[in-house]
Image (cartoon, rainbow, N blue to C red; front, side, top):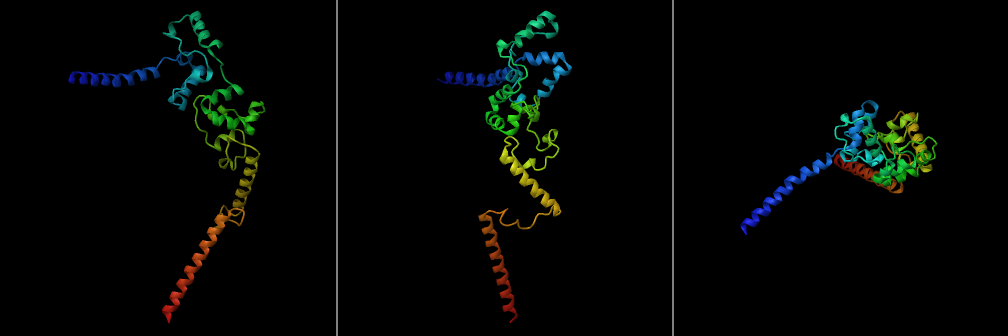
Length: 244
């Protein structure tokens, strides 16, 4: 019985030791797209260098996830391939039968990004800017703000400056869902900012009534004022009593 126990412990130890190694090896599997583009250098290698260190690379999202194609082709030593062999490998990797779509644009881009970011894409596709992009009317695409390969969360409103001269108030709206309500809200924000600037950027100690305070806030402020007046009155009464 003791021998069986030791065998089971040894087997478990072997599994726990080898599993991380095999998982790591799977993550490090050769990717034909990366190998090929790096070997070509210059502009064709730039997408790979941009992708390295990105959030997509960290989560194992490689070229074929967005561009399609077959990234599992065994290239061996790419420098030893003849032009014909290289062309055949390229044709296999970039075959439409393997789902290669190249650079996704328009609806194809939204469909590509939707695979992982469905909620965000749906919101943006229904916004004014998203519809302008899909209708080819100059709206920004996903990669305009998030970058195609070194994906990141854009800094608003800095990223907006590439299209908009005036980005005042952009940091207070939802850039993923710009609609008529958003535009009206932005107008009110800009008016308030202009009013504050006219006052020397010094907002009042108590916001204006009743526009900037709801019923609960007004009641809370009024109650606080009554308490303060009561305390002042009580202190005044004590001081007067002591003088007698």
